[in-house]
Amino acid sequence: MSLDPVQSNPQHYAVVYENDRVRVLEYTDHPGDATTPHQHPDSVMHTLSAFRRRLRSGDASRDVDMPAGFTGWLPAQVHSGENIGDTPTHVLFVELKEPTPTPGPAGAARLGPG
Image (cartoon, rainbow, N blue to C red; front, side, top):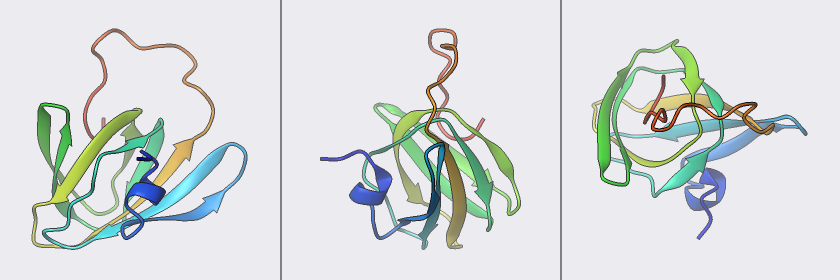
């Protein structure tokens, strides 16, 4: 099974722009919707709506409340998510295609936005 979110969760993710350096994804869902595990490279996330979701990676889980208009760094990660709020989610992800320039410290990966 592919970990590419566009292939594994096509009802939620769509490519809205792509070139040789970046891929821009649009993500939408509704309260109660969930995604299967998928992978993001290093990315910039921009929220177009306010939402609440639960992110899971392995045995780790984290609930996040995101305001509309937030822009932040999302380190490379594999996760699944669930809309646990009362509002739809609408987000843009700008995925970087270039490799990470230097590895971070061991255990520095964080689930969700940084």
